[in-house]
Length: 238
Ligand code: NAP
Image (cartoon, rainbow, N blue to C red; front, side, top):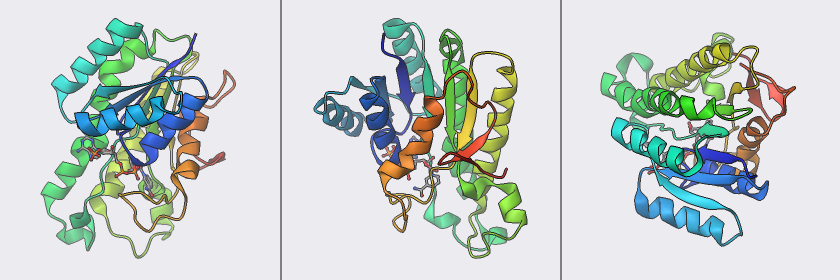
């Protein structure tokens, strides 16, 4: 039987390519997207590549949209094997001196990157634990690493909303993973790399390379890690 994978923000960018790569590995892929037209178009592109792909209306920032998506997955499949929390936002207005960034920029960023992610985890958790071996992948960022910032790795980048939201994602991942200690389930955070997408026009990696770490952690076996932070097979510093 095919495993069932749900990817949020899958209508484009890294999420879309993650769905494609998992689909090519014979997973049934549910492409979560907030916009029906964009989501349907993405799913039909993958169907055209012989992938078992379906659009699912899912806006992580809207609790009733999340609840409806959960009901649909429950009624159709009864469980969920893989959840990839990929939807995310980096606002232009977040660039500049941290002390000057409007609080609303942080609110809008946290709404999807942090609160939306948790809403999706909360809703789908009962379906994940029905899987024999659930895989939860949270798409974080190297910019969320407290230790890289403390070591002065990002002197020129000031994006207090985005960076702190991804630091929160890392901490949340450790909390989810702690629940799954000594179980067959695994929860990990990943850094996709600097990937050329609408979010990052100057990205260095292709979306194919950018999706690889999500796919790796979604497909780890029983000996795979739980509660780690990874990029292309290597551990990232928290
Ligand atoms: P992208 O091409 O801009 O795609 C972002 C996806 O998230 C889209 O499907 C978008 O939906 C969805 N999304 C954004 N804001 C949303 C909101 N408020 N509510 C619901 N959905 C929303 O970006 P990407 O580069 O592929 O990013 C994917 C993930 O990788 C993000 O979590 C990002 O933080 C992370 N990441 C990216 C890079 C990079 O270099 N690209 C580096 C590190 C981490 P719409 O199309 O409807 O807007």
